[in-house]
Image (tube, rainbow, N blue to C red; front, side):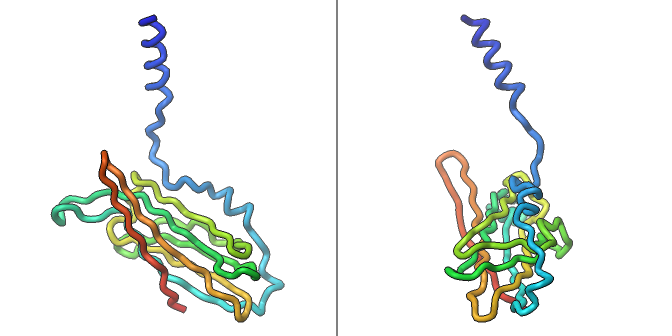
Length: 168
């Protein structure tokens, strides 16, 4: 009985994976949503800025607290498909951290897709942000970009949101 328990604990410990993941969203997921926009030249172009916080200050400027960030990209139209052209993630200093996709993808009416930045990924720092480029049919509603930051430790939880601002 003790041997079985020891074996079970050993297997459980060995199966733990401590690899640092940059995002739980695989780039392969974006390629499944890819679309050719060359025939859709009557679309309206836009660009949106979204602030994200991989870390926030805690107690002083010398201590930070890591956060899980979810970037929610939403098609607010109930009738039109919209197109997201590019999603770029920048750090506190404005340096490009990564591009999640740089080929057009589609969002069906009222569809939502997300980018998750894991709590262990602090590459963005305390002032990270996204730039999204998009196209929509004329007279269609603009996409909505929101950031949801969360963290839980013990019985305490922390969460807050940010909203994207159109810059072009």
